[in-house]
Length: 177
Image (cartoon, rainbow, N blue to C red):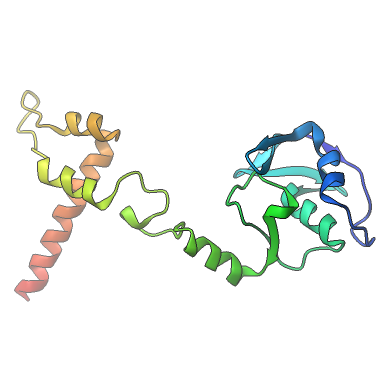
């Protein structure tokens, strides 16, 4: 871990982008237009010990550029958590952070609406359409082939199939009421 000794947070200091790049030169990797932090990370965000505390590098870079402590979040224009280039950062509140997340399609939802979903709804429908259940240990159906084709575990494919079956049963029970 890198320990950076610098000014106290209460001091009003403004640094240029070049000065910030120079401070973190040993851990800076230029990636396109981004400055990716190559030291310790937490959930993709660079972390350093700063004024006696572990802090995020992108927050430090933005605060030093603005010349004041941040009052809100340090948000990324580039959508790259490792980036700490001041041109790619701006200060915002929780509502700004939520709007940014939603506009980039990273809102956590269930199934294929999740920003990190591995399958599209069309692929899920295709798996459900083509699935053939096994009868016994010698006639296992086609679950393994579907797993191989779609790059999924057998438990994930089974979850997709069972989830639809459970929903169909619940819908049928509701209709019968």
